Length: 256
Ligand SMILES: NC(=O)c1ccc[n+]([C@@H]2O[C@H](COP(=O)([O-])OP(=O)(O)OC[C@H]3O[C@@H](n4cnc5c(N)ncnc54)[C@H](OP(=O)(O)O)[C@@H]3O)[C@@H](O)[C@H]2O)c1
Image (cartoon, rainbow, N blue to C red; front, top):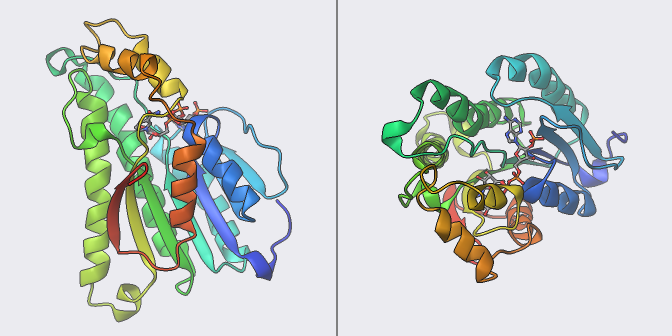
């Protein structure tokens, strides 16, 4: 990573930067002079002086303590930061199927990636960010967090939990007796990216109907050419990270 510059003290942590929306967000941030720490299991797909990649499996909360915590501490201590972004984008959609047939033993893995790891990251940044820095947090949500789709009980309920975690953080910051914490410029966005042309949509379209009874919805999205490029939601996510003023918590859907 290039040496810190006081002129552009902006650091973003983005999960899931090896494909899809996370990759588009990281690229746009780099164009906007942010430094980016990307997190995913695969090797980094971005070559840029201001990009650093951490290969971490978000299933593994212990790995966050050992591999990510020291790196975050170093970055946050070294850089002269005016603005910090967190994009909790990575998600595990793999546990599909009607609820009555779900293997409950696999649920903790889904919730580790989709809920516990994002909460870990939010906590780490709230604790470690310089108090004077603006902190913008995006939790990438889904229509499945607020609407029931047959076959998406695991994924949808994990997204619903993440949405609520963001709301809880906002309520805590607004109600804390600690004036210094209450006055910090921290805002959370729960963001629904719409129907995006990524590996996740392709995976949904390719499922057998007994595994994903709502599969034809995803097939129809493609047939009706409703999929948008990952660049479209990435632009809105980046705009929020750059925002001067923001409500403590709000929700937004692509184009909304
Ligand atoms: N595409 C859509 O239409 C749509 C709609 C609503 C919501 N979303 C949400 O948008 C977000 C991005 O999805 P996408 O569509 O861009 O999917 P994608 O192209 O499949 O990207 C998912 C990213 O998450 C990372 N990831 C997954 N599991 C991980 C783990 N255990 N540890 C670390 N990284 C992990 C992947 O990296 P590695 O494989 O390298 O680990 C990849 O970079 C997700 O939160 C998804 O729920 C997407």
